[in-house]
Length: 248
Ligand code: SF4
Image (tube, rainbow, N blue to C red; front, side, top):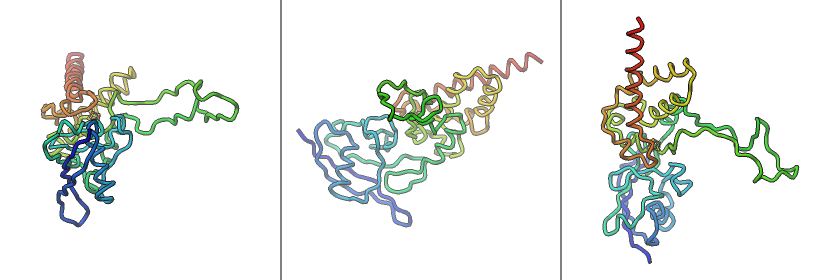
């Protein structure tokens, strides 16, 4: 069975007026919105700009707004929108590069500042040495090399798009970055490192800028719960201040 879908897609190019284009596409009943976008690109407009990679919610690359809500279109079933036009727009609170593609460089810089390791050690190394398969080594027998991931965050940027504080102040560290600080804080027992992380969270663009709207937790497709982690950081900062005060 197939579905006829009408997509209304935001279009933007530098020095051109922004607009919405309408595309009528036919997709299988089990298709997701990303499949419909790909149909629009393949059959109607090869200049349509959008990002995608894994198609199963593990890369976060394709994040957009669907009918005003931040979503990963790769796991958003088209049939949930059956009977109505599907409006697709880029994430908010990011510079738009073209159509549905936003500039995520600033987001990753903040993630990196929070201790979240963006560049992972290559998975082709073992004990710091390159793995070669020319000596008869069975690739399946190679132990997996640990790499750093921040919880189950897929760095999609959805929480930044949904965040009302980000809309007012792009300098705000943002939900994902603060959640990353919380994660690093929880993982390390190094006193100096913990102090540094709390100072970062306590910065004027840190946890106290959050308006507690909880939109980030509501929108996050991976259940990272950034809002809960921001609140936990606030509690920890306050606890540490009390301890310092009473030690005097
Ligand atoms: S915290 Fe959730 S919404 Fe924010 S970037 Fe990570 S996965 Fe996406």
